[in-house]
Image (cartoon, rainbow, N blue to C red; front, side):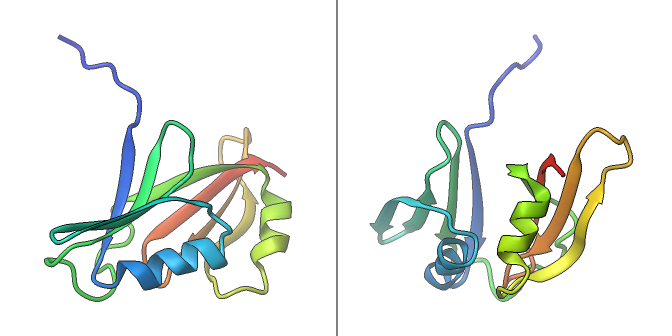
Length: 125
């Protein structure tokens, strides 16, 4: 059997999920879809259509990401240059400013959130 599935969700776990989610809301402009507050399962979900992207609290996660290059989360944007202009003066850790991908097919830029998780943005120049 070959598994065929669409991406359902991405969750970034944090010791301080509210502070991290606020950065995604304030700096990146993500729109909060819902806030879940259960004793053992609290998270802030953002609106990305069919894909659920959220920042959650996890008692086994402490401090910054110790291996940030293991997973990189990609977001499509219409223009990487426009996204760069919007973010260049904000509280963003730059890993790579806009560049043409090695394939020559798309433009990219790469940043890290305050806990060291790596985010990439893809689109036209």
